[in-house]
Image 1: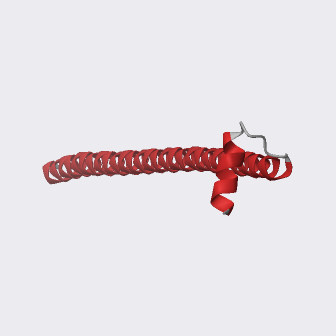
Image 2: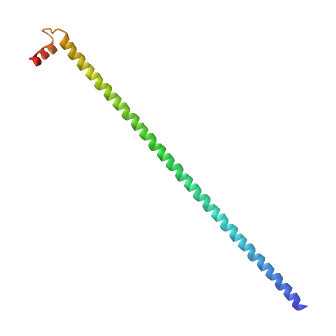
Image 3: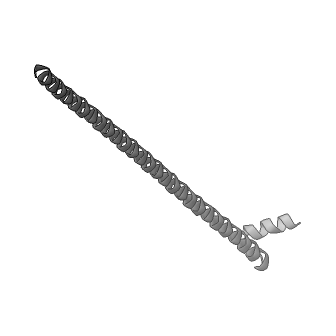
Length: 117
């Protein structure tokens, strides 16, 4: 009977120790799973932040390129307009100088006559 009591106590102690080991193992597994989840969340957040930063940088570069393109177009248009205006003025002055009869006091006519001869 004493042996039976000792066997039951031993079985009870073994059950308690087994339950403690199982509980500790479950706690370690839960902590490891939580750590993995935290690492995955941190990695996802870092990736999202990097993607957002890259998209913002690309957007800024595109805006800068567009602004530079607009400025270049404006400068080209202004230069073309100035060249056209200068050419028109020169043509008008030459046509007026050639078509309008020269007076003795017209320095431009005298200059044209001198360059013709």
